Length: 408
Image 1: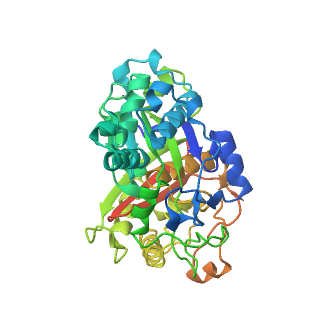
Image 2: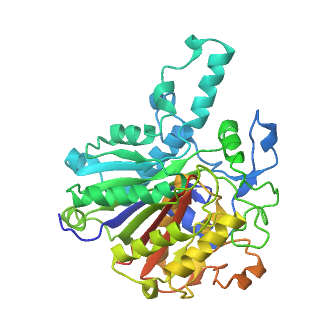
Image 3: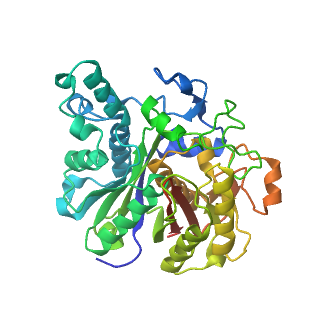
């Protein structure tokens, strides 16, 4: 293999902003947030709260009935996003040596609705009422397994569990596989963390927004930020070795994956980071591995937790990591909510599309007072030539990750 930076040749999106690249990008540029009231039957505490949902997603269009009964909504979305990404990359795994193609996904909540339903059956009825698929339907690696089985991907496969940072961690794993000789990796993450059980788990963190107005519920870096809005969906990408892509005459790539890095706060299982040091280290290390410096970064796709303490830490990390340079910052996930492990994967998809189209996607519902924070927060689509984009992601438990995506 070539040893050059891997190429992003295919993108598959299943998100509140749309299914497929075209719908997703169109909704992004329109700038209308897709946050709606949660319909969480059996979870009165969540009624009225907002979430980013994908109401148009019909799993029967993507998953056959035999697999449907074995899996959860997050895996259905992962299977759909994978098919979209492979089609976008014009890559048919049947045309490849099966050991030349791998799959790596990220997961945070797993098959939470599947697990909730079966545990309820256990307590309501008896062990005999529990599905035989409980042991695999909820499991974090279920999506990787089902994608591998469907497409007969026999290269090194796996799953990364790092909450919101997992999407970038999975890309790091994909890049390592390519360096070791794999030709292409289907990589990314989708989530469906909106079951009553999953929402209660998120409530326990204390950073879930309770506001019911989509215009104010999720406003990262705003003086009145009060937490995040959850969401479902994410993205899967096809990442390839350039030589492998050339040999199969792949279509023009979107972008290159230039470098990634991960750190950990090592402080507390659920509390905030306490300071910005480890996130700043991830930013610096990602740029070092990408062979670039702060002056080479054209825009930052920030994590944008929406929690005041976490937002302050991220701002400090960006100022330190970028050595005080005033680089434009955007948080397009304000359109969708935070998608757990699907969020960073979708951010990288956004970054690749931004490079191709020369447009920075917007942060919506920006509070005018964010100007006092000293950052250039992009609140409308901004046309500009983009060479390198820094994507930042964090997860509950102290996970930090950063990636640099570059032009072709």
